[in-house]
Amino acid sequence: MAFGDLVGQKDIKDRLHAMFAGEPAQSFLITGAPGIGKRTFGRELAKALLCEDASSDGACGKCPSCTYFDAGTHPDIRTFEAQKGKKTIRIEDLRSGLISDIAVNPQISARKVYMIDADKLADVSQNLLLKSLEEPPKGVEFILTCSDPSKLLGTILSRVTTLQLQPYSSDEVMKILKDSGKCGDDETKIRFCADFSAGIPGKALSLADDEDFASEREHIFDMVMRMPRMSVTDILTDEAEYWNGNSDKVDELLQLLQWTLGDVAMLLASPDKGVLKNGDKKEEIKRFISDVRGLTLINVSNAVNAVTDFAKGLKVNISYDAACCSMLLKIHKELAR
Ligand SMILES: [Zn+2]
Image (cartoon, rainbow, N blue to C red; front, side):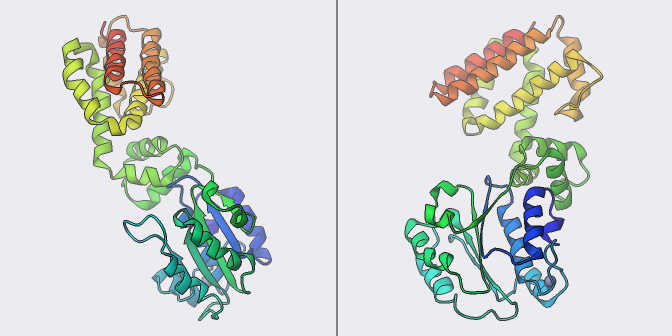
């Protein structure tokens, strides 16, 4: 594997292609949302920097350096992360593993690489690194990864080459999910998790084996399908209880609800066109539409508006319980005809 083989991120790969045709930069900062794959990308970059026969596509994958790297035993890469349960990287670790080590020659490669989780750098550690970043000895490479560069000192940002990872397309996330083998051949699940992740592979991968997410999806879908048969009492007791018990996941629940209502609207508007989010449940949605007599797009649109209003209200600290019940009752009014 070389960075050229990674899915997507064409702009960054083009920049690296050009760089590896000559002399690469010495200090990199890889940024992007949590879960987007900064570490994966950073490791491929590190492997290419250490490789004995790198091309403009990255590491060769065959030389002794690449073999050591893949086995996790390469002596010329050091990784700095916060220890489990700690918020920041220990400054002693940076002093002993980086500051005191930086002048020591690499053992098997022409370069050595320091990979640092810069989200976990306290200000005092950032200051400690400044001089090394300013004048790194020949052959020393820094790869910093960071979700929130605004927390880094301006003097650090001015010394690094920034590579900003962009959200992936749904098809790209699907490819990453397929390559991971986490969803088997379940094409519907792969597409659902990829779409839901909004271009963040780490989120898609964690959703793929999150049983809670699978059960939330089923619950919300069933809730909409059962809505016409529910009584107001059902909503104010069982359903309200579910939403109150899962208030920490309300963003996910609302997204799932929007998607289900969106699928109803799509099939109502044109029964044989369009790609549904819940593609595996098309027949159930069709049955729902034929069972609810007189259901119109206006009803569904009003239901969607109730969801949007609740989501907006959450941002201004409304009472969760009351607003949630109000949303559910409005949806019920539109769908129970
Ligand atoms: Zn190699």
